[in-house]
Image (cartoon, rainbow, N blue to C red; front, side, top):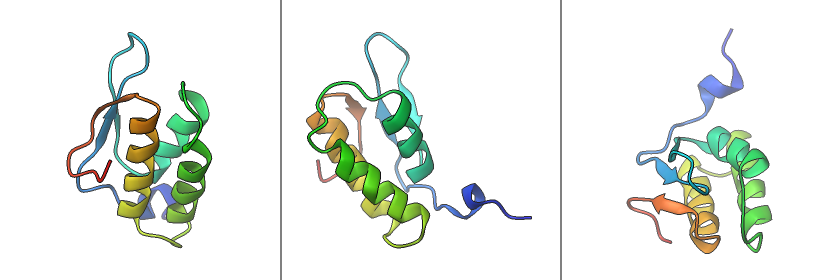
Length: 90
């Protein structure tokens, strides 16, 4: 049986984020982004909720996975927690 996780398209380029002094995390798809947004987010929440909504919509197939990537990268950039987001509009 195929799980929802198996159906989620991985991003062409992952987003690398780092919180405090922990090792950087590799965020590869909307599911990874949602987990990070729920469990590891620190700093500004100005764009946090929007990124959560877009990533959830991507998991439901309502928006593209790359749109979710852009929303997540922009929110992380805004919160100053991105270490690297190649090809991001942020």
